[in-house]
Image: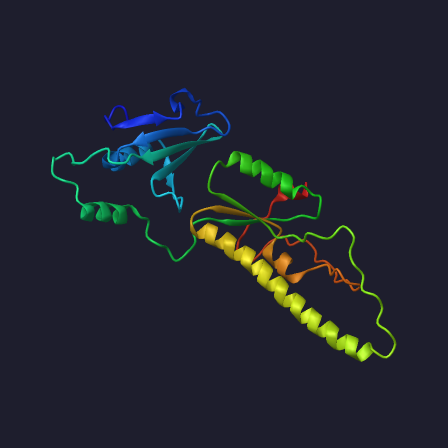
Length: 245
């Protein structure tokens, strides 16, 4: 950007930051009138914009080089320029037209991948996810789809004699309520994950959604067998071989 004479300034002492250090980023302040030229210059250097909903005055750019993610946080300056290069006023209508032109069109398919990590309990799925969180500086959402079991499960007392039929009716209602609760709980988690994927995030699922929805360990006296590991799915989400190792 220096060669193109684009107006910008470092923020938070970023001129002293080593861009290749783990977890580091460069913060800059940029004139909104220079945004198009700045993005063109960053693309030529291998940086790509990462859409971040909820941050209207920030632009995030990522690049991957020498095994490291490089991140630039560009904040748009307020009122830095009142005229365009030709000297005429920059009207509100032109601001709106520029903002609409810079928006990525909404696609029919989600932008971010949804990846499920598979493996038995204690295989290291959480360790793999923690390592990926350290290597991917932004745009990553993690969803836990496992059960958080109680330390001391409560066992229902045996029904008294003569109440077997009534107990069966109550058990059927409890079973129906449990299935509905479980479905609503996990579908709400999946909805949060897929909304993040539509915004462009990489979504990591600890366990596969089918495993979470279809298998359970009841906290009552009866138990439901847990399902075996799933090696693939029709959604095309890759499994993590490292989780089994």
